[in-house]
Length: 212
Image 1 (cartoon, helix red, strand yellow):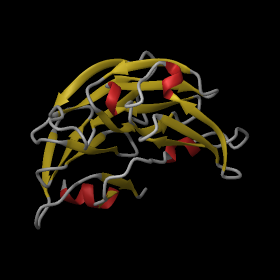
Image 2 (cartoon, helix red, strand yellow):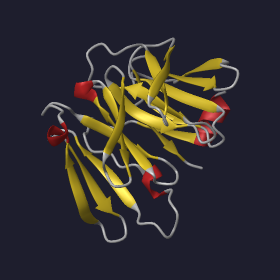
Image 3 (cartoon, one colour):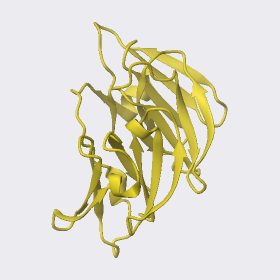
Image 4 (cartoon, one colour):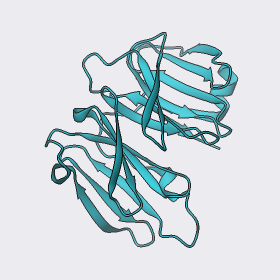
């Protein structure tokens, strides 16, 4: 399992920051406009950028939608066809779903949600926990994207799960710990799981980079 993790993903150790870009926002048809959805964690807003000219298309003020100034939008991700996009709100314990017109259409409740990843073969969104939480749940959430139902919260062997990613075929999900120098690989079909220990001193597994 060590080889699988090392060949598919590169672990990056980063400092805390509040703005995230979603590469999935580009997975749209060539005819449709391409957008980036950027979290402004300190100002409870999300900026939509037109990728063709790098100009701001719209800024979504979450307070105007009824959320607090402490909503803390953390991470965004979009459906492959660009029809919907999603954002985690640490301060509201919510995962929001917007349509392509940037209208809020649904939401799911999940404690201190952080980074997200999608299953390319299933209607599923996997949600990790925020690195800023004092004592986040020792699990990650499984959300059905069409109805935004929380189907499960999968328990883990380690604390402070944060980095999260899926393999291109959707058969494996990878979760990294912020506190225990470990990465879990779980088969999404059989639920078989393996732990990879990271050698060396104290490390923070904060993000996976997809190299495929």
